[in-house]
Image (cartoon, rainbow, N blue to C red; front, top):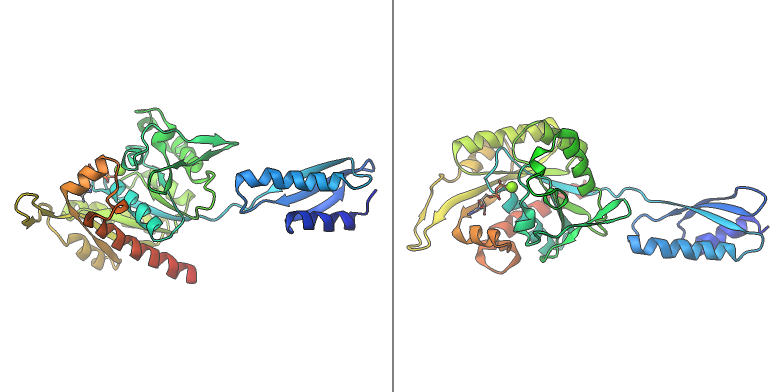
Length: 325
Ligand SMILES: Nc1ncnc2c1ncn2[C@@H]1O[C@H](COP(=O)(O)OP(=O)(O)O)[C@@H](O)[C@H]1O
Ligand SMILES: [Mg+2]
């Protein structure tokens, strides 16, 4: 039988140094070897394994080769987008943040974890598209805007998601986050609104790198936002900052800007809580129409996308500073 040291150096050459633990399992020529496939795309793993196996089998005395493939779990950067209650534009912000980060060169994916009202398939124009399973993992759906995505709405029958309870919701989210994301290293996660146990469990389990809290300017919404902030703090998730949505309404007829929900409240509240203020998105018919039509304003060159790009730039800067630590 060929000497183990010779085989080990051959295995190193064949795989670019990805092998370890080579040994004979018996005196019949059965080899065992560990192949580290970390960072390789799913499609590249099998050919590499075959090359390794064939190379070893070609040596005298080697009768069979057992290859154990291992991959370190890639640590994803997770940006959680949360709100104290529904209807404040959390999903709109999450979709546009993902699209804007992508434009800024971040390898970003989008996860819709809002089991109560998954809306990313509509926002990202991928309604009715089902993700495929590759092996035991889901393959994200490629949206039209260069941001791969997975939504609870894509893996549950319509109307079913709402019945999910804690553990089931946790498992579903696990599947979405631990999918075959390829070279994606950052996920924007649209969380369920509110501050209940389901949210807390999700946050604790999938420990976001940072959180963005969305609020409208009214006092009541701000109180809810403060609860969302304390939920993240309780789970020791750093708050990237607060976004004020639906601030100021530009009348499409006369152009006059009015403030149906007030304005500036979220900025003041952020200051009070010693949090960064990431920006203000106006209440605009254009944003509503584009969103419902599956065209995130941040995807085009329309000025409607500008607030989202400015917010994304702040988020990207926060992430970059954090990586530098
Ligand atoms: N800045 C905005 N201007 C106008 N409409 C908006 C704005 N932000 C969100 N909307 C609309 O408000 C509704 C709720 O927004 P959504 O993002 O689904 O909220 P949430 O995820 O917090 O429930 C949607 O119809 C959306 O298009
Ligand atoms: Mg939503």
